[in-house]
Image (cartoon, rainbow, N blue to C red; front, top):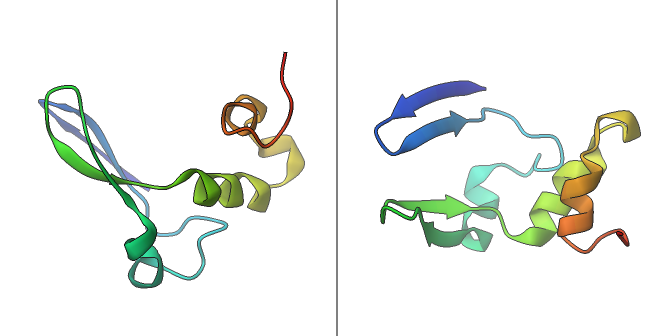
Length: 76
């Protein structure tokens, strides 16, 4: 992972993501076009791919709050 800073905020560049082994070219049509509050466009993972990434991690490394926010697990 590479982390860059820009006037608009941090930019994280991942060369490999567990759960997305298919690669960028195979998955890019499923990405969602979004924009920062300042209007800077970016591509985002849809919820189902975010869940796939979390479930590909060992249980101890999963972000339960992220899975809860995505509706994968029931929350308080």
